Image (cartoon, rainbow over the protein chains, first blue to last red):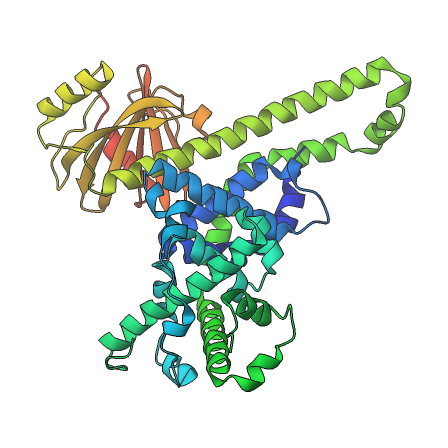
Length: 183
Length: 261
């Protein structure tokens, strides 16, 4: 039996984390708020299934991810989220990349909004994985559980996400004339 | 010299493994690691500025309050005499029957409340979809053509509001609501865009709360909110007309009052 007051005290505590993850997925606040609200409604419905003492934050993020995927499917945007399509993206070996010799200095030029926007343009599972690893600092095992994949997939997905994010930021840097013809 | 693999970089960044000796020898790999760490830190810091609006927490609490009577009922169920009854449960069938009599309605209530929340979320999704151009949206401002469209798609013609005073119909669409096909049309108003979604469900069954006493015409307005959208519903004949939009309830009610005969 779902106890609403218990749910509020245990689950709502993680509102900020769930909201940030929703922003990472949706790329805008309005859709993120909608997704968060739907997530908490679903979480209450399933609160009976939550095992006390386990990681509530990870449980909520799992529901958030599933809700997000349901929405994508309903909106017929699944092609953006298919793991197979993601796996097929050619990944250039990191040896071929140009390393930013002054990564920290260069990154200083980007606003928070630009970084979040760049993240929001990554494939769905990549951006959620990178968000969970870098921002929420979950372990690879926890992310594997949340995103329902193997740990090896989390590693490769994180790595691909980093490469993709870097490409986006390089493109911004060129637009801002912070970089010349660097790759 | 074999450089570090992507997987090794990820393990190092996670603190899973100690940096291998290779890093001391390879400037290239060191620079890659520094770059990855700098990007991870930048990303982490970028999200520090992302904070949920306090109104969001309030909205969620309000939404969860649809089940607000549950704790009260639960509290009632856990009064001392109930505790004693619970302890003696094993000894008597009568006690079990009492408990079931309490629990089953609560379960039914919870299910109904959750379904109501999901219904409101669906209404908002239909409205949001109406705002974006898509191939299934029928663009027409002509009420006769819209009526014909609905007649063909749904088998009936819904009521349309008296247009004027800055209001105009943009077009209409059919959508799925609770796995059934329903109709909706979009009205541009000076205050914002409003979708009117016509469903067979009663306002109560989709979690709306009474907004007003009966009007002169004998109608009652019902209201709800989900995400940033407000909703007002009125029952006309066999259908509930749900006005949804990011405008105050009063504006939605005003629009719906133009539907009334």
